[in-house]
Image (cartoon, rainbow, N blue to C red):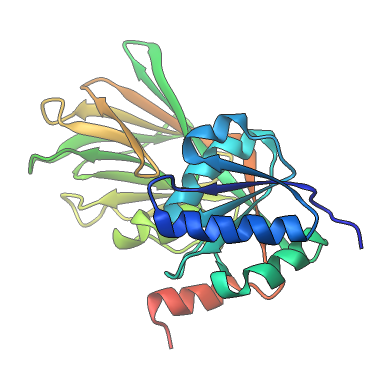
Length: 275
């Protein structure tokens, strides 16, 4: 049977010896299966040219790689290094068997939406970035609430004082948003969750909207410039009074390849300790 994916890029964290060891094993496995293998550190993501990308590590590593290659329409799979992940789900011990199945076309494909955010200051866009999990507006190190206005499709939703707000994709609904009592969204949903972080009023509840909607956060009081806009918890920009953050669904999506027996609910039970 011919290979569905011939050229494979393998990513691992450059400062993680255990990940590099597994990446070495993975490379040997892929070569044995007849693939052309390209080894890349996280810093080399922009130069990716491949039919398939495989991440060795945890969900954080996959988030970084996924954001960078999504526009290139390269499908992505993840090798788990021991801790159960929501995104990296191929067990290390089953790596060769599962990858052989995937390379020959036996897999589940999930398309996950990305969020795109633009930060504007005095009418000028000064920063743009994407997130697979979430875009977060939050206070900094001082124990002082920030104040902001939330709009959906140019319609005022509310004005609130809080520690911040999480704008989460279905993928991100099981990340930071979950710890803030946000809803768990099925990964295939076309939806975005707006989840307040420690609001000063209990009436400010999580809100789920269409992924076709545009969200705008207007900073009214940034806590003396002590607030931040962050993307997947991996990069951040300081906010000021009067800044606006516009968030919408990105044009491209992340394609995750799963083993044929993968179940989102199995992962939820294992991660959350459900009976």
